[in-house]
Image (cartoon, rainbow, N blue to C red; front, side, top):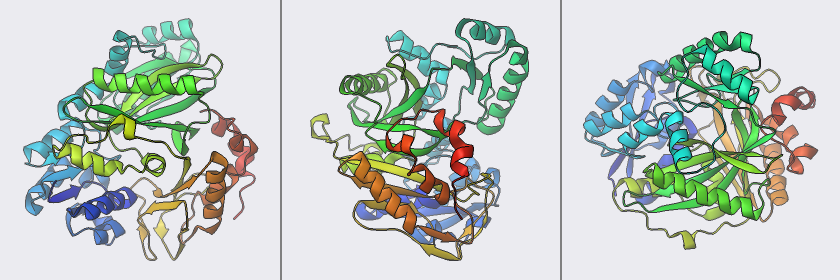
Length: 453
């Protein structure tokens, strides 16, 4: 096992990684920008080091600055968390050149699957269903028009990124050139790569994903699926496991397919293989690979009792995967609500200083956060500030625990998404499991009207 891990991130995910390191007896190093000099993740680490000014490009996205820090503190491994540089193969390569081990997939594997069209081609070659659309990056608007004519409305998507950034819905040919150029420009801005492709828009799709663990010897296991269909503008808002949309036959097929995709891409460490389920046909389609720890990983940990960060560290240190598939059991139901520092009525960020705080706790409750009274929420970074994760013997029980937890979660000094989350968890369609990836966007005005201060 490593002796010192530098956590190349901030906020709740940095604190979460440090928690496992501490349990394993591994020392941790926090990096911070000027805006985060007094942040909780800095206080939780064994040591810390400044990596630049407040803007991300000058700190958390600066490969030279972070690699310089690796050498100065003598870290023998780097955990990237999620977001920032976590999926950049260039960062993984630089970390290894700096003499530290990368806690994630091998850089050469990352470089290949960074391209979503590459993963789509690999899936197609092995008979794994993919969403109809392009299998190479699109350059000519005429090719986009052909897809539109063949499949109807399509989504233009970044080839090297996700999270809804750079995504455009195209419904009419006259907009093809404009949307292709805009998507490419935004993709270049966010991901350093302007390549884009397009996929058919499925009928009322559900977004389901499979958590995978794999080692360098080719051993691959799954930790079951997660349901992530409740989204706003392609960004997840609520996640849960198991998926209420799958029957047992679909679940077995999904898990088997995800393991197969991990093998054919040579994947190693922890990763998430994402799929769309078309409810009208019951067909499952491979979507993409997330080559990092997911925001929603705690729901899997709550139902399997497997610490995914621990497994990441053990695999990266060369121990190999010591868990057999037969030993992985899925128990009960777990659900996660993301808490953002933003106005629930406008979704505008709400930076500021935390002046009052009450964190829920109790049986079946886990809150991942990096908050305390006096914590500053900067406007430079993603507004996600906490995650509430609950467990129950059934989906309804997990939801009831969540509703109780959200009623007790108090954050003063900034506006948060908690009031909207309370409305969502009382929504009858949500309670019945009747929603898809388009549901939240279509119902937002109605839900926001129910938000109480």
